[in-house]
Image 1 (tube, rainbow, N blue to C red):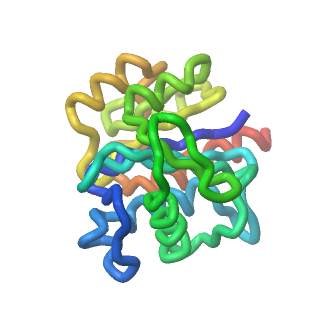
Image 2: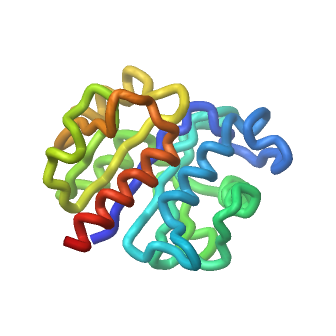
Amino acid sequence: MDRIFVLIANKARTSKFNLNDLPGSAGRMDIVCRFISQSLFISHGIRKNACAYAILKGIPEPCKTIKISGRDVRYLSPDERNIAGMINKALSAKIDEEWREISPGVHVSRKDVPSLLDEFSGRSIYYLREDGDDVHDVEISDPVFVIGDHLGVGVDDEREIIRRADGVLSLGKISYQADQCVTILNYILDRRCEG
């Protein structure tokens, strides 16, 4: 079953943005792009067993959620600009609560945190937070990892996540960037699969 990574991007724009200013006027879209890259890419290829979701909560019309399936995506490179271009294309589409495929493996909808997490019924949802249980002490199966951006997760979203979560996991006391969290999680899961 696919590994699922979910990023809550508090300020990421929900309409077309300037590809030359991802950290600024695009609302830290650079974080979203790095998160997607680390969720899906390996050396010389794409993880077929991973899926990345980015919930964009910025102006002008939150929420919009981007979904990228490693198994199905085409024409995507790991660099920030290429990923940002794909997100721009997705944000230009007319959408509603249902998923709309923009290009192979890339979907967009108006799903917010609760409605997205409800799609993962039957899977194990893990919320990453520094004060959680050590990831090395937890048996992980069918994972959906929920990660905050540089601003963390708002109170209302956190309440919805914890209500649905099977556990709160920690990678340690250090606050890592979202893309670094994904890299560490992929490494841990890859090593467990080898054993």
